[in-house]
Length: 447
Image (cartoon, rainbow, N blue to C red; front, side):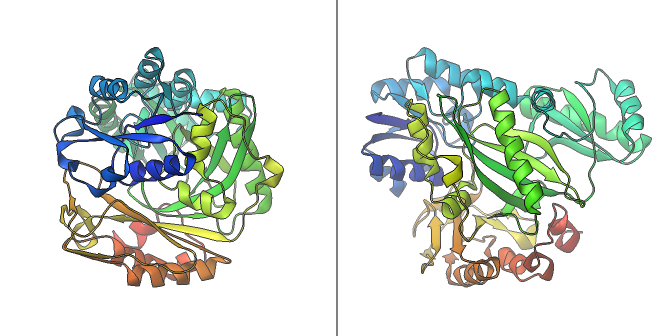
């Protein structure tokens, strides 16, 4: 087992990794930019090094600075968390070339699955259902339009290197397609440096359901069942839960089995998430693999009792999985609200600034994962998430009631947050009945 790990990330996930390492008896080296200097969570690490100015391109994305910190800190492995360099196969390769383990999949598996079009090909080989669409990348607009006619409108134009809704457009006719195709290519080139595009049939009002997978270096692969992430705004998740409500058991079992099959075909190791969309008839289709730990991993931890960060570290160190599939059962219902420093009344505009006061909820089955504290200044340079409120209860109705109580207890003064909006969602009849799809938030509040 490792003696010392560097955490190439910040905020909530850095604190989460520090805590897991402390319980495992592993020393940690944390990194921080000038914007995060003085953050309280850094005091929990054994060492902390500054890696540059506030902008992430000059700090948390600065590969040479991170490797230098790892060498000075004398670490054996780097945990990338999520975001930043977590799915960067080149950084992964550099770590390994410097004899530093990367806590995640191999660069090869990351490359295979990071390209969404290639991932679709692997899914087909593994007999995993994919959304009907183009067989490969599109050469030009004319070819793309011809395929759109074959598939039938509406279609979804997607960037092969995309994520977070960037490089993605829906088109319902020829004219809309020509405009959307050009816009998506330009956006993909700017965001990912890769203008490659492919097409999928647009599924009306789908659910977004994902399967958490763990795979060791000895050929063992298990799933930790599914999470429903359908409550989202413009492709950004707001609320996640496990198990997925109103999902037929047959669909659930088939989806989880498909996720394991795909990861085995891709020779995947470590923690990963296989994402699917589910149509109104409960047919499921593969969309992508997130080759890292997910923001919403706590809901899977709560219902299965498995520490995913600990599992990641053990797998990277070469240990076999400590659990068999037959022993992984879902107990109760877990739900997570992402608490963002945003103003829902102003189109979710980011609200950085100083937190004057914070009161954290508690009680049976309540967990708040956050690096924020009274006096903490939320910087404007990074993602606006400041915490995750998680509850775990015997039933879904009890989980909703507990979450509402916890949201009412949570006090964050000095900045605006998404807490009021979460309360609205939880009290809506469609959410209560488990009838949410990915268009729910836009249809209900943002049209």
